Each structure stands twice: as structure tokens, then as C-alpha cells.
Image (cartoon, rainbow, N blue to C red; front, side, top):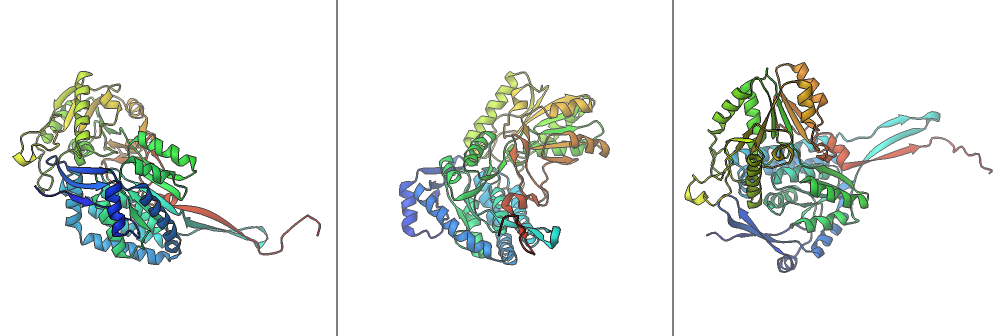
Length: 496
């Protein structure tokens, strides 16, 4: 058996002694390959002394980086994009090994990462304030300035994308960042740190620390940090937000969802089924924006379910590094077992399990210990069922019948979450009308889970605060300064 690889944090001015100290002091985390349930990497939790060292380095490096011209910072990001484009196969294999997502998907992630770097490289040069003519020939203007030292905390389902969505705009606009990837999937964030360094990002501007929530807590509590961007569950996000609020820190929260996908009777059925499958089975169902509550008009629901089951049965489950595989393993054992518990709950509460929801054992011997599940499809669901209210974060589709537009909009909005929503209809007026009434931050008409870089991403209600991507990234990673310029004498009624 291959020896598990040791991963170490990427911290500025680290010496060999620091690395040895990290291994000796930090709690050991073993990373399990989801394909075969065998150890593939391990790392030791970054100790407090190194976290504090990283924070000081980030503080020292940020001012000099912010003083560089936007054109220079943009050129560095474009160089990073070029390096990434030359490492597509390596990166997609790393991401697949950590997450279990099929390699066809992780190749798209690398392409999306290159797009992200190039997008913010282009936007950096356009960053500007506004000028105002004021009474008495006086002038006012605004400046967009960096926030300072920032923290990114990533999730385990999209580790490379998460690291880039946070770091690219932060660095582009003159901030420094300390990034903490999920303890389950740290590999590509460490690669990204090496990529940035090779591209010319100065030492201390982007650093990666390793560990669980304890490491994140220390970063969030630091008085040196001015902004936290967190992706993860609503429960953890709420705690991060509360801690940040005590220090009056700016936050971006990209949290969970229980998103509706509404399919009207005039929808293109095959396109709607394609979207429902992508909205539930893509990334092995581990996507925060997934449309797991599929509302289907009562007049087409039988046809929809029949064709959905037929197409789902054709999905190929197996080795995620095989380009012909459609579904890989769940990312970790905890998530694997959690999904099985939700399937059991759905059956007990009276929903009809019409497909899947079981461990897949008909696999080659080298895969049989992996965390493979068949997609679960439930019908005869009601809004009050647990599987229709709680985020499962796995391949569990709940199909619900509806009769009228107003009814389905009310039911779709009856959730504490508000990350995403989708509508399928040939009537574009209805499509616009429905999404206008849906309480969700990201919506689609006749598609689902498409995320172009120039569209902001983020949720309503308990699904988060703030926006990533697009020009929303400008608001998230800069602060506005007002300047008043007096052109004449100061008017003063006080005696001279």
C-alpha cells in the first residue's frame, strides 16, 4: 500500500524548524480516500504560534501589496491563470482524489478557476470612485480601498473553487488573505498557494493554515483580521458571524440551502429532467444550491417520474477518475452515513422510495469499501417531511406535486433557506413573474446550477449574507472612503 503523504501549511517565512514543530505540536488529521476508505494524506493541525505568525506576516505584507498598481496586481493574477491552465490534469486529479467527484466535473472546476482569475484581473483595472461637484466649487470624491487582512474559510465539496472565489478578488483589490480549507480536502488550496507564489504574489499575501474549526475560530477572533468569508453549514456560519460581529468585522456567508425547482406543465420535459438530475446528482449531490425539492405540476408528474427513473438507471457509478463515470463516492464516511439516515427517515415518514438510496456493492473489488451510494428518488412527498425541510447534502431528490402557480410559489418559499431556485416553463412571462416572487438569491429559468463568474452568488434568509463573484465581489472585498476637498477659505462663525 502507498504511504500516506504528509501535507504542511503554507505560511510566510516558515523554516524547516517551523515545519517540524508543526508536526510535533499539532493534532494529526488523517485524510481518507473516499474511493477505497484507505488513508491517502495526513497533516498536523497548525498550532496557535504559527497561526499568530501567519497573521503578523499577512499584516506586514498587505500594505506593500496594496501600494502596487492595479495593473501590476492584474498581471500577477493573469500569470497565476496561465500556470493553472498548464496544470489542468494535475489539479483535476487532486480534486477528484480529495472529494470523490468525477473527473469530468473537476476539470470544469479548473476551467472555472482560470476564468475567476482572469475575470478579477480585468476588473481590478476598472476599480474607481466617483466625483461630485459641490457648492462653492468644492469637490467630493470616493475611493475604493482594500480591507486589510482577510480570512477565507472553505468547504469540503468544492475546495479549489472556494479558495479561488475568495482569494482572487481579495488579492486583486489589495488585501492579504489567510485561507483555511476544510480539514477533509486541503490539497488544492496548498497547490494554489504555490501557484500564487510562482506567479509573483509576495510572501505573506496568501497563506494556508490547516486544521478544524479550532483553527478557524482563532483566525476569526484575531483583532488583525478585518473580513471573513465563510462557506459551510448554516449552524457553523451563524457561530462565525456572531464571533465576527463582536469585533465589528465585515463578513460574507455562503451557507446551506433547501432549494426549490419548479416544473410547470408546459416545460420541455427532457430539459426539465436533465436539470433535475443535475440539481440533485451532480457532485454526488453535495452542492449547497441543489434543487432538492422538485415541484412538478400534477398533470405531468407521472410522466416526469417515469422518465426520470429510466434515465437515472443509466447513470454509471464507479471510479471517479474514469472519464466514463457519472457518479463517484460520497466525500467522506460521515456524509455517506448521514445520507443513508435521511433515506431511512424518508421511508419511515411515508414517502415512496421509487429508486436507489442504498449502498452500491456491485463494483470492482478495489472500490467495494468506498462510500458509493445510488441516487435516491422519493415521490408522494409532503412539505412537512424531514427530507423536504432539512439540507441532506447528498443524492436525495424529493418530488412534490402542485396544481397552481400561487400555491407552488408559497410552498417553495416556506423554508428558512433562500440560496437558490429554478423554474421550467415555455412561458417566459410566467418564468420572470415566478422568479420575481421566489425568496432566493440565485435563480434560473430553464436551467439550473449554472454559475458564470460575472453573476453575483449568494443567498437570502439563513442561506447567507453578502455576495461572491461579479461586481458584488467589489463590495465584498473593498471599503468606501469619502473625501471632501475645500477649494476656498473655511467658513467659520467663531470669533477670530
